[in-house]
Amino acid sequence: MTTSYLAHAISAAVQGFGWAPSGVHAGANESAKKDGERSEWQRIEALLSKWSQKQPLRDEDGVEWPSPALVEVALNLARSLEGQALHPPSRVVPNGEGGVVFEFQREHQLQTMEVDADGSIELCRFEDSQLVDRSRIRATTD
Image (cartoon, rainbow, N blue to C red; front, side, top):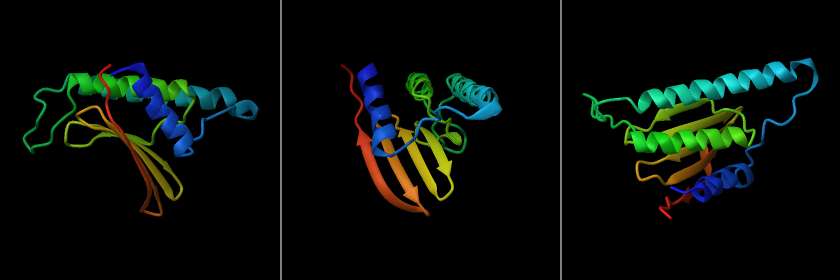
């Protein structure tokens, strides 16, 4: 997977889905809020790193965990999202089919960025539980 592939996914997330950067925080809480966001990104990175150690990749319930290679893609994506000053996702969960889902929840809106087992990324936006936008970015190997 190339850097341009991840850059395309992030660009689509930020522009096409209106995901706003966390931006400049006003007042005395600026430093505390940035520290809190950094701490949350670190927690997400630690969680993903833990998944890369998961063996076997399929558990007793048939849930397929992400492979170490896919976890590396998800880690790179998380670092890139943080580098774009985006708010951390509300949740990061395995999709049960060898992929990873980043969920961004705000009021009546849910936005997801799902890295599938083949490395492709699907972006979805839901408003009041209704799917309103979907985009897929195919994995590249150049």
